[in-house]
Length: 110
Length: 116
Image (cartoon, rainbow over all chains, first blue to last red; front, top):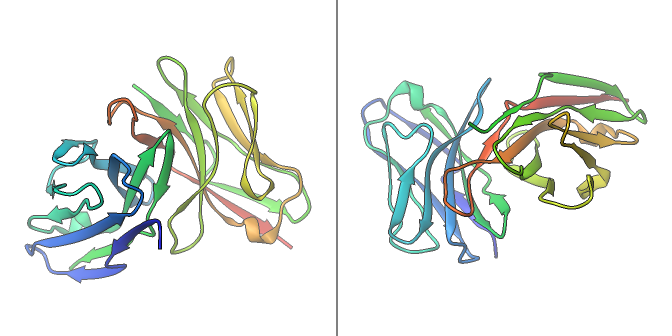
């Protein structure tokens, strides 16, 4: 199916563990984004990518790493998870000033 | 710096009444403005956007928004609210990250509650 999919939908991990959130889009959009959603903050940009192998930091990048070896995939890695990274994570892709979001991953760090 | 403000954390409306969800923005240059809706445990769904042209923008599910440059506002409206409109609504403006495409900068969201 065409669209943007995130996996897993839910994840519980322990403090200090590495965890990777996956994002896949089928439109071949050049631009992709990772946001986190927290109560009282709305959505904040973590990282973005303008094309394969081109990534850059957003507003709140500390503790996160991204890669984009293929246009359709944009994984987000928490290198050593902390409780402050408990959040809902959204991936988005964009073209022609239209932004489409995935269903999100709810991550809990215990 | 670009920013978006949604002054109301929650808006309560009776079914059948008109609804307004407020949004003000601060940008340098011409704004690109967006409204999204989020239902519980779901992703963000696009409602409408203003890029240029007519100040009144019509979107999905009967929603519309009016761009007011002098008041730097982009309020979301609907003539007759439905219980199914109850959700979290986000206003967004295009930001500076992401080169020519730009990222979206979001307000904190307004919870809309429509009572029967």
